[in-house]
Length: 160
Image (tube, rainbow, N blue to C red; front, side, top):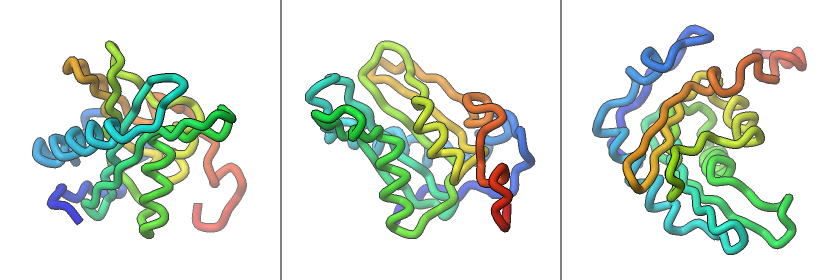
């Protein structure tokens, strides 16, 4: 779908941010940033006024966008990260290497707890880059934000 560089798979558990970040090229990171900000512009956030966009890099090199979609029944609200994962899974993608999250906040915003759990289901070694319109940036690995995550391994699921 895009010319984003495919990230490598098979990293060791607990891989650090520098090791995970090596999979991204400057070109693919720029593309993810652009697509995350474009998704943020389409966010539906009439209640919080906190628009968020996300661009998820599949290990196949594809990019899937998502934005937050609020609802008057607040628990029905979906975060940008969740909508990106849902759209990617709908397309048949289930492995990801990086996500860029864009907001208009002053400080870079990490994924909420529910989003961390959704992301770890598919990409336990995901690199997370959070950016703001003002140019602030933060980077984490999902393992840093969600240590000792609850994964299918705890359920004894086959193939885990």
